[in-house]
Length: 151
Length: 140
Picture 1 (cartoon, chains in turn yellow, red):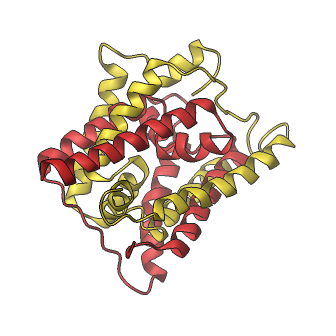
Picture 2 (cartoon, rainbow over the protein chains, first blue to last red):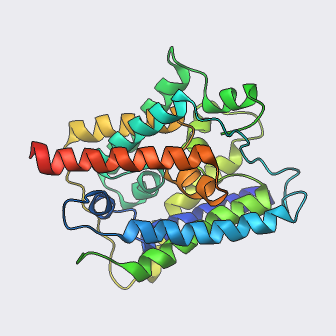
Picture 3 (cartoon, rainbow over the protein chains, first blue to last red):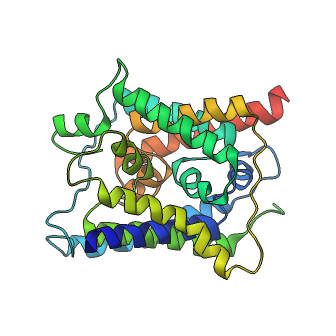
């Protein structure tokens, strides 16, 4: 129960962060990716802010054998660069540049009640399902398990 | 750079990091949205309730913000319907094939200097920049 509440709290903080930083607005994200246009560096500072806090979190984690409410830290251990990683990132980046939505802002954006967001999210879920259940399947989790780590 | 909003970007980014930090330190999980959502398509017993809770939190984010914000939130989506469908599919497929997105690789992975995440983030950022360049400055 408390883990469920923590997950909700974490998601809420994440969602408020996406909203405050306006990363929930695809136009803002595209403004960052458009180096040749009227460039908006905001996204870089969003990442810097998030990275700074997460770096501290990993420091705290290093001094603990287990999370507060769970038995183990489930942190990926793989370090190899394989084709799946590179091709996946390439496909993702292309879709990201077409609209300006990545998964987090798209999910949060549903709350704004725009049908365009819903269309994007449904197509995104279809893409995830196609990857997981298509002929090229082996979900990242399964690959990670096979490699003895995570990704 | 007239659209640059450094203060709200840093504060918002800090909140995103805080959300990811809470999930890591209390539940031991990585706040990678594409993984959290993707795994819901093949739910594992005892490992899906927290995912739903996290997604509900993501949805609550803009609502909570609206309660306290001075001005209503508006977003701009220029993409036409077919583009939304294609882009959504590519984002879903690509993030699940590449084991992560802006949150999992870009924030959680990069913060622990994971070589996989650094490479993935470099690739999807570059692909995004190239795509926007082609769409805005070559095609149109």
